[in-house]
Length: 349
Image: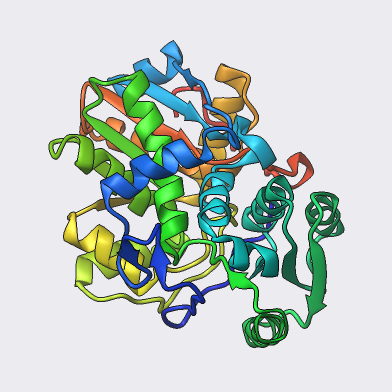
């Protein structure tokens, strides 16, 4: 499983002034930005399939529609936001390239998107990042710059690269171009299953969940959007419940793609749309991961299976949010050797 993006203490820098020449970089994208992103990235990403599973329907008590972003290029939804950001650059910005600090799915996605446009990409990674992740990102054409494994070192190293090269930073989630790109997964899901009453998506920094909420509510205000989060790192749930963004008291999780915290921008999107967050235990996440792999024959990472775990938890309480619910399986970059065994619960856990 790819390491998470680092926790943030505040709003991250951005070096671009406008989104599509229409939306200021400080503002969240609109549903029209998401729709334009869908057109812009169409040739660069896969339109992933939607699957169903009778055993999951029975377990939850509703019809579940799984949006298979684990089958996306580079193995996760991250390619959507990265591609939209890269393709939004003007020619001069593109000539100077893009940069980011990341040791997870965003690193590979940005490298892939930059190679697709034929522009430079530099990714700052901590020296202790798994060799497999460094090699995968380099294989897509990125220049890897190693630094000490601290957030301060990552940020300072990236700042030096941005100053030296004039590259545009593409943040993993605190960038409206990225949020708009991530929202295209929900647009596709709603086009394929237009009668959905709810969508469940995992939440970490909030780019995917924000984009999902913007796309869903821009299509139908009555669609319920639910975020799924490990209880061990439930800063999004606590932030939205308390009305202010917090990162206090977080621990660790098997869903290590969900360890980042909301930015001011993503928090505002979720707060303004009254998005609910369902927090689930580590045991529930592991069980959901194995359930999806055994019953659908699809390999997903725990971060993606967290959305399934959340829906199952709601279903067990008799609180399935709609008769037809979409679930975004966000990624499939899992190291099976690190996945804990099943706890011994039966299939109807």
